[in-house]
Amino acid sequence: MKKLEIIMSSKNFMLVLGFLGLYLVSTGVSLAGFTFLGKGETGRKNTISPSGKVSRIDLSKPKTEECPINGAYFTKEERQSWEKKRPIIAMIENSTDARPQSGLSYADVIYEAVAEGGITRFMPVFYCNTLAEEVKIAPVRSARIYFINLAMEYGDKPIFMHVGGANNYSGSGDTTKEVRALEYLETIGWRVPRGNDFDTTYDSAFPVFWRNYERLGREIATEHTMMASLDAAYEQAAKRKLNYKDEDGKAWDEDFKPWKFADDKPQTPKASEISYAFWDGKADYDVLWKYDQSKNAYFRYTGGQEHKDLETQLPLTAKNVVIMFAKEKGPVDKNMHMFYQVTGEGEALVFQNGQVIEGTWEKKTGFDRTLFLDKNGDEIEFVRGRTWISVVPSGNRISY
Image (tube, rainbow, N blue to C red; front, side, top):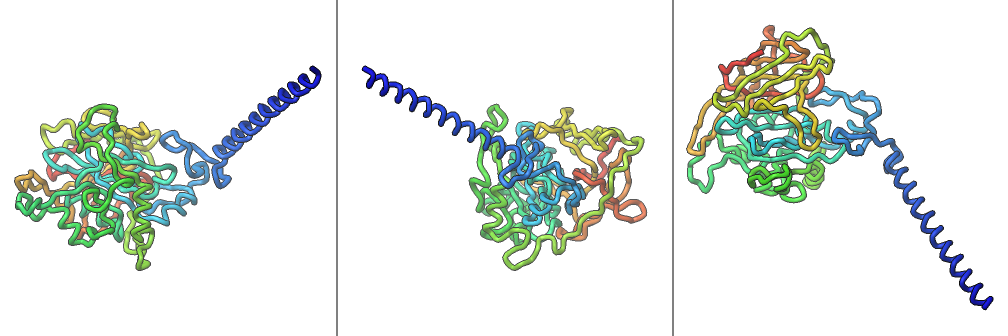
């Protein structure tokens, strides 16, 4: 009997030891997890990214490094990361069924123009503000030739992301030559196998692009479902030898001309609200900007609704709102394509610091930088931060 008691006691003792060991292991794992989350895998302090997630970098460090795209300041770690890459430029749609978009709040610069039928489209430029976490963008749509002309000024072979484009489908001739975007991409040397033209219908697929029918939590048509990952795009770019330098050792910014930048100088606003339409009868695409002097920023409203990013739920803002008046032509073919003259010169309005600057724009060729000049012909300095450029038909009224 005593022998049995001893055996039972031994089993109980071993059982207790087992539970104790399991507790210590789980505690150790938990402590390790907290240590990892607190300091990051390289021992650095993690902070919260704009979307509310744990950042991949320490965003609390001093922001001393100027972004060459929009002049905003970032940390040294962010600069070290972007200096290994080249800009990504994407085509993002703005139809009412596609809103809200994903990823626009991460863009350094955003262009906006009519794609067809008074429906506008966006072309965000991503470079400096995409490093804290993986950025997903949506919905990606097709290219237009005037957007390509604007993208061409971002150095040598930026990554250009889109889903097809205006083209002479099957040789039908329904698309006039002056708006054939895909042919134009071939002409400028971007549309080559494994080149900088990332087109899901040409040579890019998952994990760079994929369709997400649930992105808006409601039923949406297929054309509004294409998403893309900037992380995956950069991984693919590296495989194509398109990092900061290409395989021939040429840096993307070797011939890139940055704009001039200035610090915030908020003033008593003379233009606290800016409103404009692209086409009559298309109120869903009318734009209103409201100036907040305390933040020295303009908050965007589209079709009467505050415009937010689906991923971050942040309102879309800009430090500079630019109206670039362009000659409008079209529809130019059976497919109702439009054409906007974004090379040459024209009138412009630049809103910043609560003020308005009347001036002009000039862009000699597609590869030349678009410059915005004041009445004296001097280049306008942009306030550091996101610049939003709306290409508006010449003669349209801007209220402010």
